[in-house]
Amino acid sequence: MLARALVQPGRWATLLVLLVWLPLIAYVMFRSALGGAASDVLLPAVPAVVALYALGLARCRGSWVASVGLTLVCFWFVIAVAVPFLPLTDPDKPIAALALPGTTKHGVHFILGSDARGRDMLSRTLWGCQRVLVWGITATAAAYAVGVVLGLLGGYLGGWCDDVVSFIGNLLLSFPVMVLFILILNLLGQSGFNIVIAVTSSSAPMIMRIVRGLTLEAKNRDYIHAAQTRGEHPLWVMGVELLPNVRGPLIVDACLRLGYTTVAITTLTFLGLGLQPPDPDWGLMIKEGATAALLWKYSYLITIPALAVSSLILGFNMIADGMRELSGRS
Amino acid sequence: MLLIMLAASVLLFAVFDTDQFRRKVAVAELGGFGVATLSEQDYQHWLSRNGFEQPFWTRYGQWLARLSHGELGESLEKDVPVATLLQESIAHTAILGFFVFLFMIPLALLLGLLAGVNEGSLLDRGISLLSVLTTSTPQIATAVLLTVVLALGLNWVPAKSAMLEGWSFRELILPLLTLLIYEVGYLARMTRAATLEVMAAPYVRTAVLKGLPWSRVVSRHVLRNALIVPVTLICQELNGLLSQIVVVEVFFQYAGFGRMLFDAASFGDIQVLQAATLVAVLVAVLSQFLSDAAYVALNPRVQF
Image 1: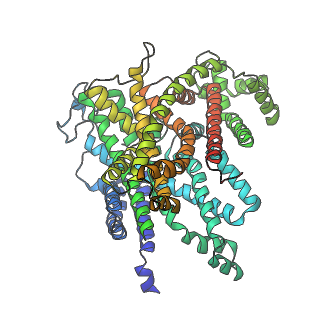
Image 2: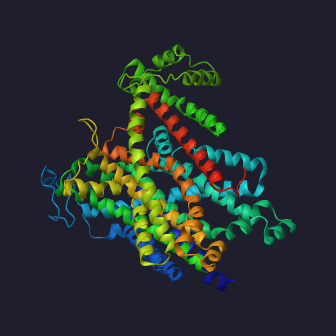
Image 3: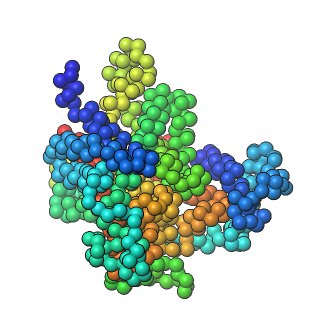
């Protein structure tokens, strides 16, 4: 038993993801409360990311698209968990001499230059990935939790349950995503947690549709009938028999959705609706830079965070593409 | 569809009926510095004067009746009827949207078909890679990069599109390109996938084996069926485009519908926000309906 569990990479992956995500969210949310010991929280996450990368590479063998995507994403994850240990200047501390108008320079004093307030661009860019990754994963996971449960209920139970679930889904889908975000964040206020709510309400209906479709398809398979005849509880059938067997397309979709969520979070922060200053964040950097950088020599203020966020999203999309390719081949 | 629209309007009305939004309206009407300075007494007085103690559904009915007469109220911020504001901004956005569709449809379909028909060729690889790249870049990043290269570096087009000195097509170029780059990539990708599916169908193999020239197989057998999915997607994109237009219009300061909605939301201009959201939902529902209708029209095998 133990040996079989050990060779199943899926379980290890789940454990490792938790090992990365929990320290990260603890660090981002409670950094000030933890004080000086804050960065120690991230220590176990560093080897976990490396292990995840190794596991992932083994899975992606045969698809260079997926491998490149995985490398991109893991690069940012390594940065996210290791950034407190890197020899960087404080991303929030301006150097007064560089904050004077006109002294913002590329390549002077700092490797990537300083921003309009005299803060280190390189340091800010690297620190910026933390919040995007943490809230991106949390929001996607929340959307999946809601979407999968509703989709399973609707698809498997059918009847009025299906009608209600589908109607709520259609209702939420009838709002353009950005309009929904603007409404929710204005109503609830602007914080990372409310971004999770906003993303959940826009993504969960789509996930629900996918899960519902897959459930309807799998519902009439023999193994489901067998479980029903055995007299298993519907919840057991849904969770243990159905869900693991439809996970393939869901994993691909999850990678794509992580990309969408990253886009959404950066965009919302850019619009001033999401995460608030002063902590560094790519969307905020673009927002701050866009007002200052209307000259060619200051353009690096916005191109650097724009390229950073694009590379992360490209990574997620490439993983999804590569996995689809792999599953189609086998 | 009607049911969805009705439910959405109830939802919207309920959202704007919350205490938080009411206070904003009250502050704007009574004149004051902010929600925090509004005294509880004034607020209660304002509530009763405006008939807020009537039950929810009565007020909802009245609101619907006013809506059906086209009375959208007045903007709290700009002192203009919402209808005028709405008309103007929708016209601006419609121009932008028109040009997006004008360039997107032929370009994306052509690229997608070319890639799908020549699967695995260098052309296909190139188009696929390009579409992955363009769909992976969020609009703000595209907007930033385009501004830096075309406006700041090469100085070909103005960096902002506020159109303060009247209408100019030159100022439309950057928002248009930003939207196009993403949309073309997305649609081309979907077209390619649809074409691949059709290419694998038995009737295409039959047509090839029958000895038909390749061009005829593609134009008569593949094209018709490969276009079903993209056409429905184009209809649906009306909804997706609306979201992206908000971002692009805010970035380039283009005075369109999306920017109006965003400004109304951030300044608490409830009347405008309510009307704009309703229009947005209407467009979204219509686009879904259009897409369903197109699917049935193009695919006679489907019956509803």
